[in-house]
Image 1 (cartoon, rainbow, N blue to C red):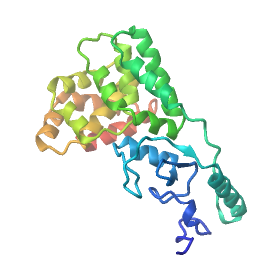
Image 2 (cartoon, rainbow, N blue to C red; image 1 turned 120 degrees about the vertical axis):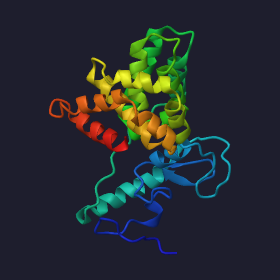
Image 3 (tube, rainbow, N blue to C red; image 1 turned 90 degrees about the vertical axis):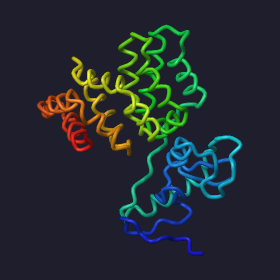
Image 4 (cartoon, helix red, strand yellow; image 1 turned 90 degrees about the horizontal axis):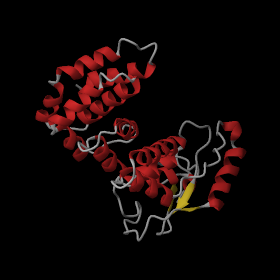
Amino acid sequence: MSVNLEPLDLGVPIPYHFRCPISFDLMHEPVTIPTGQTYDRTSIQSWFAAGNTTCPITRAPLPDFTLIPNHTLRRLIRDWCVSNRAFGVEQIPSPTRPVHPSLARTLLDQASSETCTSQSCLSALRRLRRLASDSKNNHSLIGSYNVRRILLHILFDTNSDCFELKHDSLALLVCFSLVEPECVSIASEPERIKYLSHLMFHSLIEVRLNSAALIESVVSGTRSPELHAQISNVDEIYGGVVDMLKSPVLFPRALKIGIKALFAL
């Protein structure tokens, strides 16, 4: 078997064993799973976050999701990058230290706990936001722990009146891609859509933007024409999006989110 694949956008082909079997891109942080197969950390964590419990190559069930850094392979990849710098190959960045799985689980448990104070839950949620934004690895790891289900519960919990907690859960929720059942769970509940439409007129621009982003995600992820129409027929949503587009210079993110929301609707 040839050890090289065809070139991508580089002036030199990437060695076969330096490519992630999932993304087929050059691995930046190779890790080995219990079956002995090696993948790029971000790709395999995304695989797990999607609910898969098998090895992508062998399809063998995994006893656990332990990821062991393959330092030897990473050194080889690093040396190859240095040797081929003249061909446009960039040095792979040093990996940021990933959040420990036990810490991620603890913070999620704390954020969703009914026995903790609202301030304690809010503190855990904000720390999760910081960790998720630190690196793709952290984002993938946190996403693999049912974070979307937890955040949806916090956001739409009618027994809670801690608005800061709800707003922070919304901010973290829009950082993750919803699967269709989650989109349906929102689109099929008129009260949830009504709540999101009200948030689009909140005094804080971040809350308005995140609400529009979630609505766009829900509409795009819902295949049912009936549910799609149920959201599109809410006048407040259109009004909120149009109002958002009036300040693209002050809030550049508003332009991107607003246009995506209009196209989805």
